[in-house]
Length: 519
Image 1: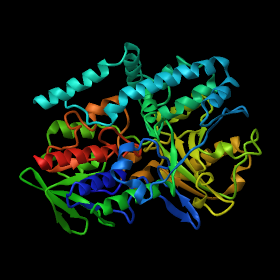
Image 2: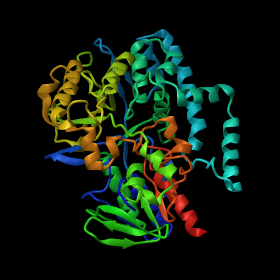
Image 3: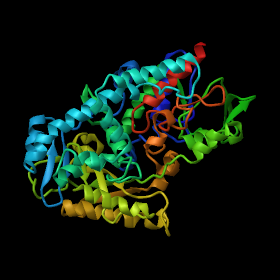
Image 4: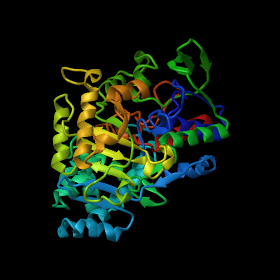
């Protein structure tokens, strides 16, 4: 297994559970990939990159006995959205209270809220079996491929015309167009549209943002669709759980073991070579890295079909997310809610309106970062006090939009100015925020690439755009986890179903590897 990110660890655990002798080779001093927790200031635990759980597939928790190894999600009781005029939207677990909260801003939208969630839940029900199974090989010629295609058509044929039409609209259109069908209030549309832009170079009015919006609705905890949680100790705590599970099944994990190449002989993978020249030999090699590294760096492209190489070369990565993480001397104060911390129990959505988020995207189109960025943040230490000393807090912020390549400058030159812009936005909503800052960590797309290995700093290991999803992820004809090199497989987030902490690519790839080994 090349790479000890969450998909690599998931894949290794399933392979070891099946009885295969499994070795995980991780280049860094800790496992986790982009799901890690680090103490960058004594007593303060930072989730350097990803920081929340939702899309983790429920079956993985049971099948890998994760609870026995410390799996402990901490549910988010709230989601907070300042509206930019001193008011706010505060959502919690009580559906009726959420409707009442929307009614404060728009009676029309409160009535539309039920219809919106009914339609989104219906779409999630339609998509979930596709999400949790390998895509059919629509290019295959054998009867098994034909049966898989028939299954897909039969499944979709079981839904009404409106659901299928809505599905096509979201997969190909914009989040903005979709939300305009339901809501009229700018703040309510701003709250809902923001998840249509996370990690992808699209604004809420861009075609493609509808797919990203739908993707983020696919999560669940304990059967509650769309719910999110923090893991105890951050996402690094979660990947440590995965590592313990993999080792309990018999997998071996070696740290500080960077793989430079996959060894092949006569079109078959026979092992890997490390940076120091050490070689390990095995009949199966699995890459948990992104498609660019899997196909263009670990192996010689001349060993691959020309059309595959061309598709990987033009695959879109284009990271646009940065992280600005803060150690705080106390909790920020929102003027309209001075005497409560209820609004700090989950995500802080700093994108007051759909127009605000779209304008934040505008700068990225021309190679620059936003003066007033959209921020998806969380003060995790409110839910998990162990992440900061008593009375102190850690705040994790995804900041968009910040393109991987800056026109006319570099991230080394701009990182602090960029972080100043993000901090100024927080200051505008939480007066006095800057006085609370004890430490600030700035992680640009270039840093994400350098540290985690994700090409161009794209947090999904390849953008979530329709031309590179499902049948086409990572390339037409290669969406079922095998590669043209016999014995060489892929299981990273650049495969179906895609990014976020899902574990699904790792599990589905393991099923393919085990099936092939039994034949």
